[in-house]
Each structure stands twice: as C-alpha cells, then as structure tokens.
Length: 294
Image (tube, rainbow, N blue to C red; front, side, top):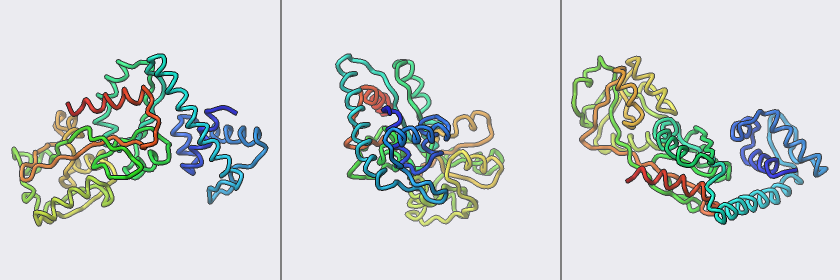
C-alpha cells in the first residue's frame, strides 16, 4: 500500500470510471485495476462491487475512502510544507481545461512556465465545462480553466483574461470582405454554434436576444475545433474566440471579422477548491496564469 495507490482509489471512487481514472494518471486501465486489487489484498476487503452496469463502493469501500482521502490530503500538505522549507518549486500539477483554452490559450503560458520551472510537471486534461467543474470539486485535478466562470461557494475563482470574440466565415463568404460586423448583420445567417449548455453559447444567445437577432442555427458542437471545421466546409458562420483561429486565418482557410456593435469579450478564469492545499508549484503556476492579464 502506498500513496499513489490510495490516490488512484480516491480518484476511481470519485470519477466512477476506470477509463477516466487511467487517463487522469496516464496509466492503463489494467494498471488501475492492479492498484485496486493490491489495496483490497492489503486490507483484506472488497472495496468496489463488480458490476459491469453500475459502479458502486461497498460499505467497506465507503469507509476506507474516508480514511484514504484524509491520508492523501495530509500527504499533499506534507509535500507542500517540505517544499516551502527548502524553497523548492517542484511536483505535479493537474489541470483540467475546456478545449479552446487547453488547445489555444494555455500552450504559450505552459511553455514559458516549464522553461522557468523544469522540475514541475503539468498534466493537462481537455474537457467540457461541466467536466472541469466536476474534476475540481471532486479533487481529481488541482486547477480548472473555464470561460465565463460560475460562482460556487466551494471554489476560488480568479479572472485571468478576456478573449475577444470574432465572427468567422469561409474565404468565399460575403462577410470575408468586411472589416467589421454588427451583431444585426448576422440576421438569418446560417449559424454554427456550441451546444446549448456551453457557457460561451449561452453568452452568444444572450447577445442575440438583446439585439433581437435571429440566426439559422444549422449545426451545434461541444468544442471549437469541430465548429471551425464546419465553417471551413462552408456550412455557415460562427462566433468564436479570436485566439482559437489564428492559424486558420494565417493559412487563409478562414476569415475572422471583429464584432463592433456590440464588442464581445469572453472572460477566462482559473478555479480551484477553497480548501485546496496550494503548493509552491501551484502558486507559481497561478502567478504565470495571472501574468496573462498584465
């Protein structure tokens, strides 16, 4: 029995998935099973009911989870205290980010941070907004990166940036010749959006309603990469963060036109649990993220 095995058990209990737990720890599903079997053998207890349809902790598993969670948290505190004593910035940081931030906003920050802190390993997971919140709340990750951060009494929220939103279209679309657009110019246009529950789409819909603009929504997706692909095949136009289309604009496969009436900016925030032990490595990473606003 070791700390890693206890941490894997805690994550497995929270995520209720061998696949997601394996992805989080960057190991195979069979390795997750081996850790679980090892813990069960060491304790002489069955911790998880073997049912292919459902995932449930046994009564013993629920009790062991309470102790295991405490031990894992104490271990984090110990590592943090030792690092502070030696002024060492080292360790692993687990970050869950929505796709657009993880693929476009985070990489340049991460590159600089890793160059300055070579003894810190940052593990990034790409997720939907709801998955990011869940991962942070269940202690599965240390930090979350989201757009339009929501208030939650259990979470600390730090605003780190605002991303300008632009209209994107194919190079052959009439909008491609425009220098700017009003939201009213989008009336009756074929529109490709995010899924309804995505915070960015909620904000877009709010602006459309405010200006009494109707679009013809022909497709919706849960991530910006698929939206861009749909616009590239001339399925319609879309509103996305400007940072997500710099490569396509440079290649000439998409045109990005600023919205000026009204201007739209997407707030970006980092979230973590208020009761989270902030290690020196986490503090250094938070500082790197907050420099984005300067």
